[in-house]
Structures are given as structure tokens and as C-alpha cells.
Image: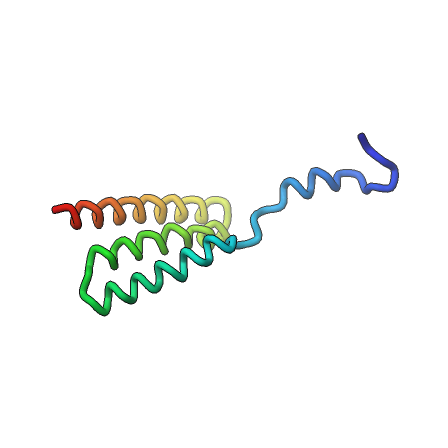
Length: 96
């Protein structure tokens, strides 16, 4: 139902606004994994370093999408695939 005092199309514009940035949980996860990455580097735990890098690369895909619709999407997909492969490789390395 439309009222006269609302500007036309304001409801559609609110729904189409992109995500502004990282949520609080994502920020906390980035800080936690950055700490785990530093801990892994200081103790020489390479699977932990790779797993931390995989998570950080996966979360930073947001910045790749800002490069534009073509290159940004391609780079974002590349980062996603690389981070998943890196995480699986780190898990296999731990289990071997």
C-alpha cells in the first residue's frame, strides 16, 4: 500500500542497497584468525598458517567485488576457490 507522503520507489531502493562492509562476527573472525596466523608463524605450525591465510583470503573477497562487475567477480571467484583449496590442503596436511 502506497501513501502519498512517501517518495515513489523508496521501498525498492532500500532493498537493493549493497552490504556496507563486514559484520561484527566477520570482524571478530578476521581478528581471531589474524592472531592464529601470527601464532602459527611464531611456532612454525605451517598447516595453521595455511588455514589462517585461507580464511582471511575468503573473507577479503568483499574488496575484490569493488573492482567492478567483470574483474571484481572473476577475482572474487578466484579468491574463493583458492581459499577453499588452501583450507582443504591444510586439513589434509594435518591428517597425514
